[in-house]
Image 1 (cartoon, rainbow, N blue to C red):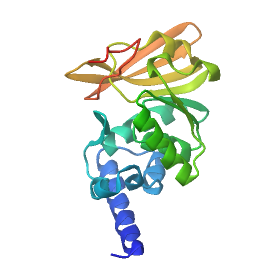
Image 2 (cartoon, rainbow, N blue to C red):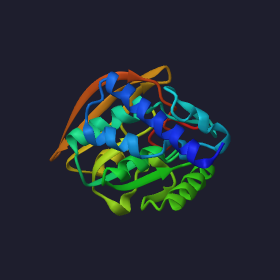
Image 3 (cartoon, helix red, strand yellow):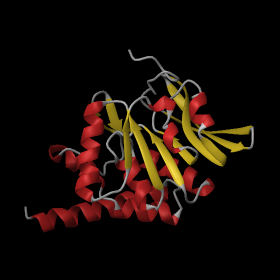
Length: 220
């Protein structure tokens, strides 16, 4: 099949994905535009790109997954409604898709990944696509102190409790979006800083891979 035919098929699949997101209740126009524009299949290995627009998470190796499109859209919507612009720290680069969505929406994106193989793979994709996304290899539960404060923090793994260091790195009026709970499932949680006060809200249930690190779950 010619490359142009594949491009058209993927474009159609993105349109179908966005229509499904609308049916699920995603209404923010900036989020929907990003999902229509960012080519999700490019964050998959070539042999798996046929699964890129399916309504499910997909393994990317190293015991990690690229989240279901709805999950990424849900977290992104929660961020943009509370933090429409600014500097965002992502914990768990994974495939790089969430970071690319945030980059498309105009955020200054900093992302931390603990697994070298995934870090290198995402770096190669960002470079190939010409995306200016700041990357770091390390323990995401400790954030990225050199660039504090952050207007928003998105954590793409499930934590037993919000890592204290990440909370410290939030700007005043900053917001962290993080799934909190045990291995069986988590509640999407939004924590907003107002001076020294942290306001916590809980939302829908999800199931994420565990947040591994000094202030998360232990490895293994």
